[in-house]
Length: 381
View 1 (tube, rainbow, N blue to C red):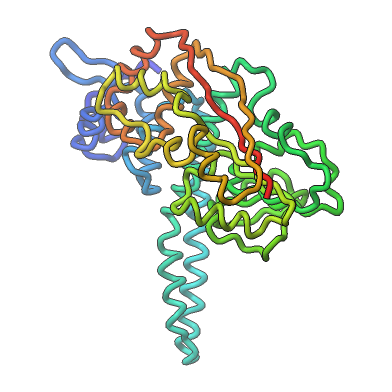
View 2: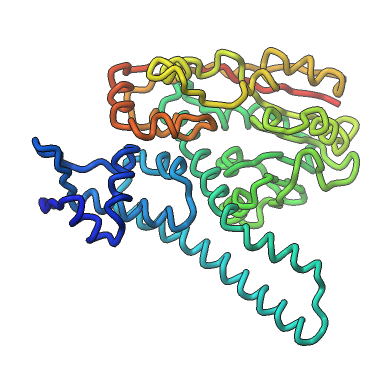
């Protein structure tokens, strides 16, 4: 790949405006491979591959901020094309379902049988493209965060096997996991699930579909809201909420719902972080730019190791905490960049245009020792 193109040639080749190319250059999303002494930009075929992905994602209605985080990973061309293909297929499926619904609605009008309440579902289906984006970003961000911990954690047991080991499954015939994510907790499950009802739930339909595809009929996989759990009172022997409670809009409503569906002798296992968890990453990004925030709220202040027991005590007869000993030692910049770009703050808009500079900044700090402060509350009703 040694051919180079001017901005005009490059734009014409891609069938986009020069203004678009200059804008992507200005914000740091697509920098040219070469800048001549006279300041002229020279784009290579490698840049064209990057542009192709940007254009596809923009056509799928991903925001510039989302695309920044998706371009940071060092992926192969094959992986990139597979990703784009799966996202395009999801949009095709969405549009096909919308077309069928519109055809049915039109047919019902001809038969004077149209129900105007159907317009609500049509409007919702028209908005499903944003749901595709949110589901993809949720899954991708979760995978990135799990990968960092799996690769660089110093505790050889790993978080999910450790959490699994904390759960007493004896006498547990009905279990509910709230916020199951990608189902990682059950990756190495050794339980015989025959004659047991284990429900894995998440508020994200995309996550539930992924878990259902991964585990088949071994588990009951459902979309559910922790603040309105769709089960009768005293139904479960055990409820698990792994790093979930601090995300609830109404924390006390969620805990009350968990208590409602737990049997009188049921147990809740809910994990969370402490105030020192990953503090070095926060310090790192703020040393790069003090305006960066990685989260709109400090989750440990909502429900953390420091205040969790006080929050849970009114609902349970016994609350104990078990701590997970670990730290990260990271010696590669890219996984840290990916992790930081997956956060829920303003980092994409600040770091995105300076991604190369940011990666070089991180490289100078390596190896980086990162504190992990996590644990699980074991709550007996």
